[in-house]
Image (cartoon, rainbow, N blue to C red; front, side, top):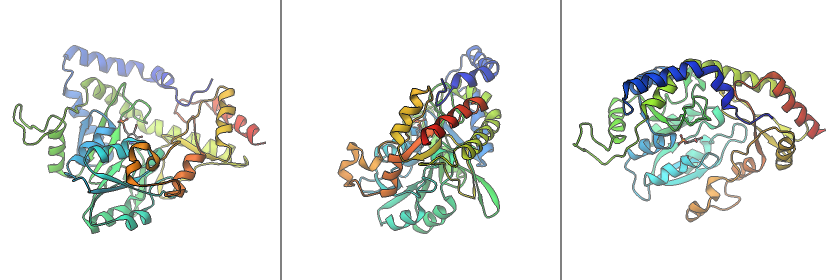
Length: 370
Ligand SMILES: Cc1ncc(COP(=O)(O)O)c(C=O)c1O
């Protein structure tokens, strides 16, 4: 049995450190906004390269709180991709805006800046690119476009902690160049908590202050509320778990990249299967290793019959979800997005995957293709 993700394999390697960190929180009995929360904020800000980071309850809230600061009105538009997890567009809707979906670059699965530019209208307020599967979108094209039109740029970096892109000869981390970067600590992410969690990075001191207020009911002081926020604090326990795991993140990401190289070689000549492409400027962190397969559903059940886990991220694009029917998209509106939904299959790429397990996956796919 080779699962898509084996968190228990990781648990064996981190047990001592994480359990010790949890015990410390238990001893402090400071479960809300204990010391590890501020420590994690400092550590993630330093890691991403922003002066500020504000921890919150989930990646969804990291997006929602970022979008709330824009004070969107009902017909205000936010341009995003439809080939993503639901939260990206759900947060736009819940912040009071209207998602405007544009098509992806089929090479990287990421939002295509040319389509973004074409979709800007006087009602556009923000662009939300998603660094899908752990590979950064073309942020150096989106940023000037946003600056030119006075738009916020909110990076959905939920799947991309540690991903970098070379911009003007310099490596730039996901979450550094946007107005904000929204990260998720959902357990399956490259840096996963033992429950829900998220964080927002920003270079803007005032924005950081406002986000910190919004996550605690909009009040900087207790019982004094400048604006209406919500309860979206990160639990001290989760912060402690994440702080204990953070020093290992780069090694885990490197292991994912090594697995990707092995797959690229092993699957190169399998008919009907195409391995993922990395944009030359990117260092990918492979939250998912996602191939395209002509007979995707057959391949998936073939693997499943052999005890090999895989998953389809994402089977139905967001512009075709029933809840967004009123936006007026149809099948055919976003052809590359829809093709990706029909073809993609994610394979096991977690850091602890052994070479032997990976060979089993490769051999099974080769046999399927033969
Ligand atoms: C692209 C993307 N955006 C947002 C989210 C939301 O994160 P969370 O599950 O922590 O709310 C996720 C993860 O699930 C995601 O993959």
